[in-house]
Length: 288
Image (cartoon, rainbow, N blue to C red):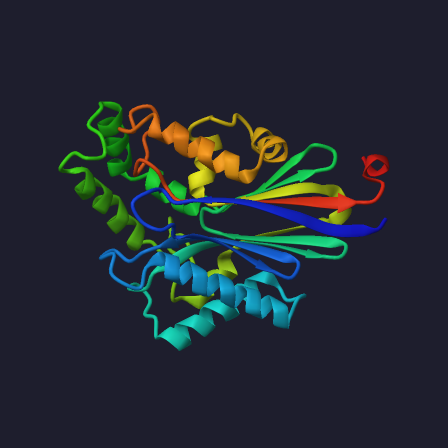
């Protein structure tokens, strides 16, 4: 069977108020999606800067060694920007990272933190690639349930103690970031070793119809809001419309819940980035 690569369509949208810190970076045969996370003080450099620099560095490493293990690719990329920009662990901006790479007969994926990859096979099966360690850490903290009840009661995002509650959760996260202790999680920051803890997956190219790669501002449309009841429904929305229409639909739904009472969350709207890779093969109908 002759493989013809993939087509790529994307949708990106700022959560509002400032430029998006999500990034979609293309490389030959690969797509990298990142969600930038700023430092606690929100000083420069910001998470969007880090996501862009890291994404471009990953693309550069992939170009130099297209067949390298994706964990090694990410580790080399983090090392390079740590050295070039003198980043310090614990006080650097960070980013979640997902990479999807097509190599002739094989498709590879890497996920570090909450930027999921969802593959759909030509037989209609779904194969999610997830890294849920951060979500599990946050959901176990007492402040998380306190915060949810607080929003469900209609107190909204503008209440005076909103930021204080979020800071509790942020401090809890920072105590567990990039370490192997129970409950710890890993994210791209100034610790190159984090790349070794990424979740990876590979598929035969002939088995895959399309792949969704997204930041958590998009995955919320399925997992938290139910705007798209399944990953399959989200993929079909990309096919019948576009990733751009998807991200706008999610943002419109959030705008209709301005206090977070229907869907408790951390802000009215998060940044959103969605990449949709559609794989094309000759005689797909026979393969199915």
